[in-house]
Length: 113
Image 1 (cartoon, rainbow, N blue to C red):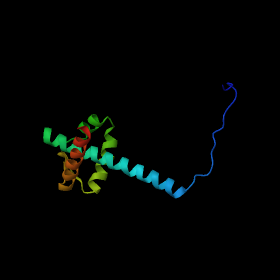
Image 2: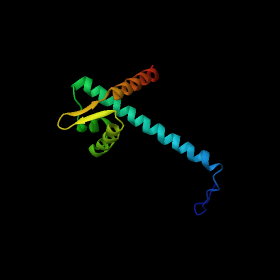
Image 3: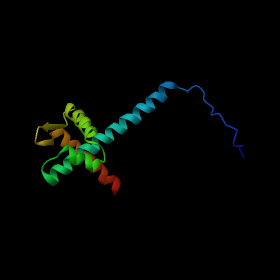
Image 4: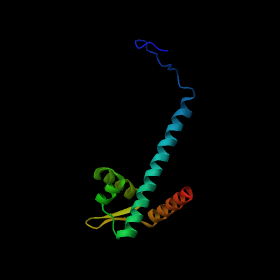
């Protein structure tokens, strides 16, 4: 039993094989980025099929994030050629974006079965 005034110092030593450690974090970040892209593309596709258009405000509400967060991701998706943003009209998927949304939807269906 530890005395309340006794602190245990964590053992911190050199990271073994730093390159593998760094590579592991890169892979996790890339997987998370890919998940976000899939979520956005699938949501855009769903909203287009349901309402015929997609607005940032609707996406923000569905994702539980702020509109600036959505705007930042939409810029990335547009730069990657996955969406088109048309002023005063909304967000639309490119052919590649729709293809990726469909692939994501199929993966989710497999996982949910």
